[in-house]
Image 1 (cartoon, rainbow, N blue to C red):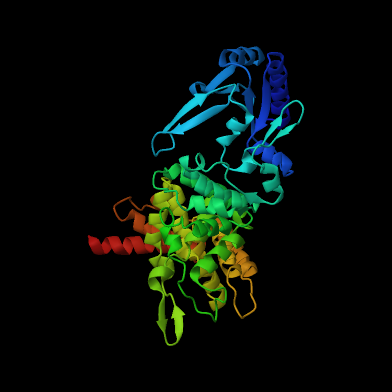
Image 2 (cartoon, rainbow, N blue to C red; image 1 turned 90 degrees about the vertical axis):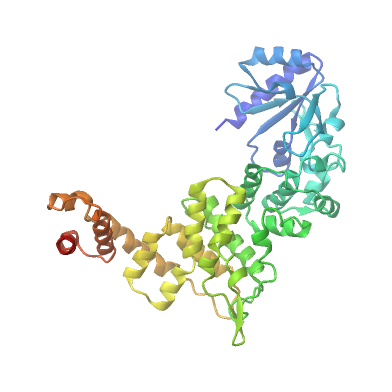
Length: 455
């Protein structure tokens, strides 16, 4: 983590030295926007106008150890500081990939033309590092006050299709409304050339930094841009639910409500991103299991039927195996917590459930979000207190001494191909609350009995 105050002081010293050489330094991009919104400025980006690259490099060398992040693109940094230093540039698309750009640096391009390559007007504002003067050639401050996300230029905006997803995640994070003309332009931009890493990056920001992550998907739906990267989510639209339990409407409406409810719990989960993805995928199975029977809609077994759909979606956007396994685990188990409480199931049953979960705390939170995302004619009754009592029992049980492999060996049981079966039995007895000494006796008796039969 860099010290923002220290970074700003360095930016001012850079600006003073550039000014002495006839140039000017501007704060650009998100730090200007965030400052005007009263938000903490985390990333300090500056653009240096009016001096050539050799002059800028000479100045930087006098300030510290210069690092060329993208020297051919006119991008520099100073070791020990979190300041990105760039020269004005133009970009020309020559292919469909995000690297398929020809970049031309021009220190004398001028503020308006330099800002034209930005995506949205609220990101195209510039503030003089020394005087604080705001340069706003495209009306970004007006749009910021009205909380509108509007693209800067009809010609340059479509050159990077990631901007479609950026529009959706900005709308979610900052509670902006996307301008009609920007929605219309985004609807024409193909997204198939994007890499999964770039898509995952925008999705992560939307799910982890928004109070209402559902806005990300609502905006993509409005643009008609769900079909390539999120077809399984788009398929939820129009899938009916039993109105006796789901007055919120179809499965899409329910999933969006669960996403927003889950946002309040995400920091309690072991894997916040995986947890939010679980909220997104938990009911995908309803698209293939929903049936109308005896005057009611039901979706029996949807938590299991949805696993292939969830895995397909996840593999499309990420290569992280542990993340995929986490989401599939919570998706498969998401119905069990409430079912266990409502049915009054035994502690042994909840012990097995928590033991099957990669994140028992996250599972409880997903269950709570699922319930809060359901508009029922019946008063919502939280199962959280009951589940936390059960979780405490499970955690206390797991902290107790238990039968391990070395215990079996010390008791005279020789290792063999069937050894894992005896360890599994020991674990089963542990979950049932059987004390270690008694469990050891039972496992040894079963092992000797089985081995005697196989001789």
